[in-house]
Amino acid sequence: MSGLYFEQFEVGHVFKHAVTRTVTEMDNTLFSVMTLNMQPLHLDAHFSEKTEFGQRLVNSLFTLGLTIGISVTDTTLGTTIANLGMSDIRFPKPVFHGDTLRVETAVKSVRASGSRPEAGIVEFEHRAYNQRDEVVCICVRSAFMKRQPAAAAA
Image (tube, rainbow, N blue to C red; front, top):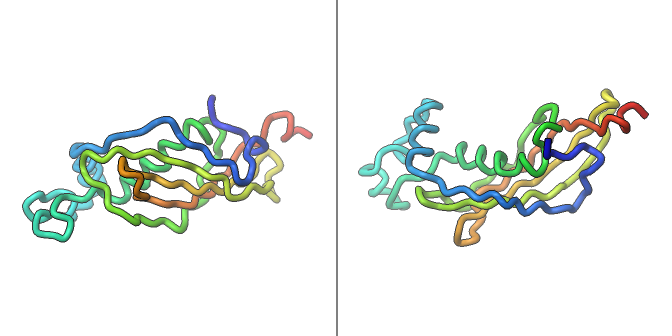
């Protein structure tokens, strides 16, 4: 397990995740079709050529999922109980097929759970950047995190 326990997070700490990911046409097509999002901006090259973008856009929910997913190994893998919510989700720049994303995660807040002594809440801000260092996704996520076994028993 490589995720951190509640007590190991410090407000202000920034994780610069080593994993990067190039987004492919197949990623975008499969995700859009599996989620029944038939938006032609994601699936129809001819339609998209006539838009202001001149090409298909990657489904923003795929971008959001990838942004959070890249962060998991360094932060919450095996130590999260559940996601409590996501807010302030923005997509300042579009993502296109062939873009390579990297992610940074900042710890915004930590607080012990008032109802569950074995858990705490950590608020993260995730930021995804493309290969041109443009921010393509920002998300604030609240995660319900396990406390270290010794701390939970104390």
